[in-house]
Image (tube, rainbow, N blue to C red; front, side, top):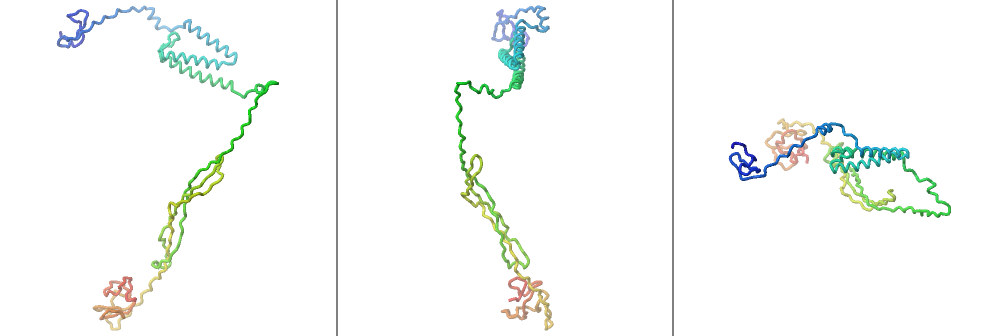
Length: 314
């Protein structure tokens, strides 16, 4: 046997099936399936399936009952209320059909039709309820119902006193800015006429705590209970110059001996020599020059000891 693997009639036990591995018989067996006899379908049933389903006696009774109820309610002015009731009944029938899978006697053959019936019935409930509310609005009770017949005592409701508003006390914090101060100082290191901001002012911050009393949502009192400076302000300082500018250097004086003046100096003649000291000082020469002397080049004789550009000025 060269058949593919599968279940085949057992050659050893009639009425059984045995597993063929494709090479040989296996040990698994199972009862042979008995084919069901064919069922003859009447031609009338096949033809009737394609026809449109006709209304049965139950459908006609239900539709007549619904129509009669709607007609009576329309005459009595309760059409929309009755329509809402019918729609609610349809919702219940649709839910039952949805759970059971259909109600064939009412033409609901599957759950899809049941869901459609529920949706349409709910829309009808909303529409009819809105229409009924618009036609029959709820108004105030007639005065005749409020008046009691003679001899009947009516208990009048006692007047409820208005509640006294209660004061509510809360604490409120508020952050405010502290402005910085401005001051001026005289600075001898700046020339006269110059103004320089040496320290930039920075505002500070202060937290104020208030006790606020409100009555019926309206503030009636506010009391300051605490102040806390969180950032100190920085004062702004402006420096005004007071230093007088240096006088212009005097014209050079010619060396009477005719030895010439060193071009690195002006104001006085600094002779060209092996060494020059300030006159009246502690230097040992051999040459001397009176002051003041302005250094315009290199201080070859080291006359400007303080480095301010003016030599022999002491």
